[in-house]
Image 1 (tube, rainbow, N blue to C red):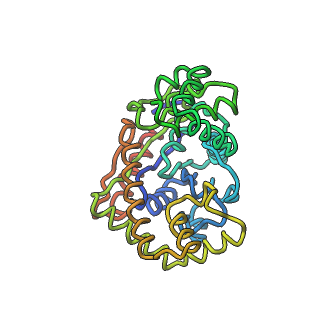
Image 2 (cartoon, rainbow, N blue to C red; image 1 turned 90 degrees about the vertical axis):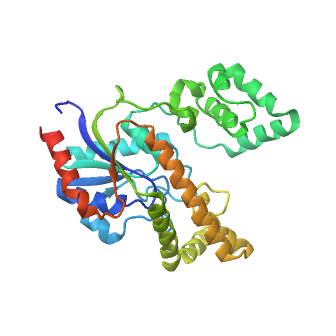
Image 3 (spheres, one colour; image 1 turned 180 degrees about the vertical axis):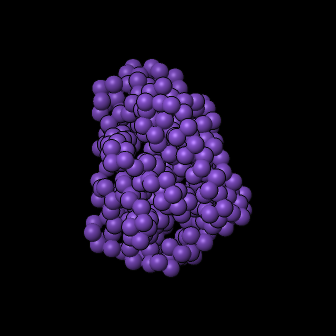
Length: 325
């Protein structure tokens, strides 16, 4: 695959499918370094519930885009794409193979396809003002307001979809540009079309996706939740609260953290919170699969009843042939 674009191996798939161990072994085999594409692993001090690579795993293979912001900071996909792109360039400049690994589909797409993204972090005051307008004047008033500044987005977003209408208005107020000018990815994954190679991408990408039979994936999800609790997730959340973290922060809305915080704050039944956590994680995995399956570039690897070593040789060999051939 001759190309003047930078090589980039991408490994995606739903939560708990087995990306971490396979990515470690592939990186060791290929001389790679891992750039995380996980929207929760960017937060410092949030280690257990985000399934961050351990200190030992990070000694095995260098990792990037982990622990880059504090939990009380806003963090946008635009900022992630900019910083991850710099990391990838640095890895390549040092003669290593960059590997983008994670399950946050928008993060992956923003990097791989070079999406033009708005630098528009959440504006809580504006959001509350717009929600109050919707309560006072009706949701149609918000949609009419959007029509005046961004007719394209207004045509794509249903008037009753208040959350997306507000986000489009928020982007306009932050950038003085319509949200529709930033590309189709801003319209939400439910409306996105199947992806082909992007002419905007600066990378010669090999995109690999891991999948498992649903029953096995769900079993792994439930086991992971139990392991996180045994690893003292509740103590981690207590520590975050002592540092000033609260339920209004985006970071504290993450799976596991939200349920643990509810239990610690209101004394709700822990078993009920854990069951909700497992259920919501299963639903999240389904949404991840829905996002990734629209990308026709992904080469899917069936991991049901397999260990990383069972597929490592084939995958590493394929990557070597592509980039050396």
